[in-house]
Image 1 (tube, one colour):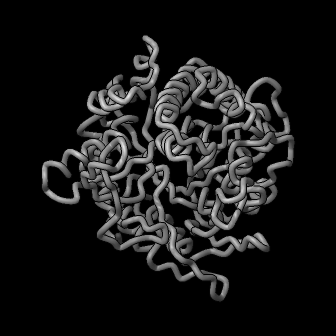
Image 2: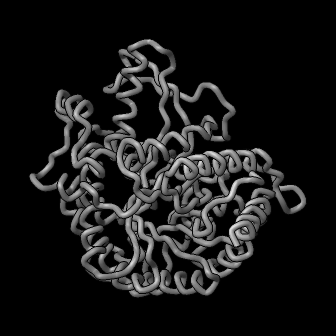
Image 3: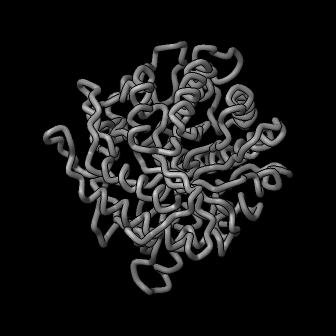
Length: 448
């Protein structure tokens, strides 16, 4: 890494999400979200953990920003809790919620940290889920109205926006497999939700462009690197299907204005294809100024005749592995960065999440997390290689700034570069935090 120099305007940051860190679920007029409902349902979350308190960031954001400043972060990505702004998802605006994000924005800018806000990181207001959630086409308009308000209130100071975080996870885990909120297990619903997420993204982008506010807006996709488990034609075909389901189903509409023909045909043959109106795909096409990529792991894919609709079996097999059981494969990040350029467009890209969970142990007020440092080094190097080959990568956000509520895993998995003692809410820098601080400083010095 000593010889690698990133562009002088490259943004080094860290990322979090509202439900995972804010806590204070009953404070400041916030309405309930589907994750409040889901996490408070016994048996849904490891250890029956909830996000009720999380990292208490709602009350500790000033000191958390002090940590960001000490780290030398140039940018910070987080999400806005929709139900803090509209407790019922629409209608009456909650001024206290607006005020919180107003204060957060100002404090970040005072610390010379560029805010990047994601409008939807899975915590749909429960009142909207009661109306059918994103399976209901009306949601695309409620989302647009919420986005429009945020552009109006914060667009004078925030100039990087993300509409949705990982629509594949929200639609698949939340609506096909049911292990995320809202806990629905129905293919037809999940596929329809995926379409409405993309369409609501497009409407929010239209609203942003009509607002006249400066800046750029995009969407963040989680992209999984799939490779055949063997060189047999069956495994290769299975890999194409898995890639179509997880990656191309979202990339193709955004860049080509059409769903991938092979996957659409598969869905049509099972009567689960989404209902798409005449101009939907035309609105989705090219509705982004940049692409956010969340990348974590590689899967080996096998054909398995009796394994569900896709007839695929995708698993991590080679290692090394993180505490999540995810295979560490930096080449996969390089693969997607170069693939977007060659297969879709040389669009600006931000790596909006990349990081790893390990079994961190606090000793003498720190964590010796050499494996996380090694993970980051190798993924930084993969990013640098893609940049050297002409890919327009503009920033990198470590997941995560803080240990936090890791969705269905509760507090059992730690992704942070800062360790959180959930009993006391004390923050402790892991060795990866010190390493990242020094890396950012070195990059500033190299480019100055």
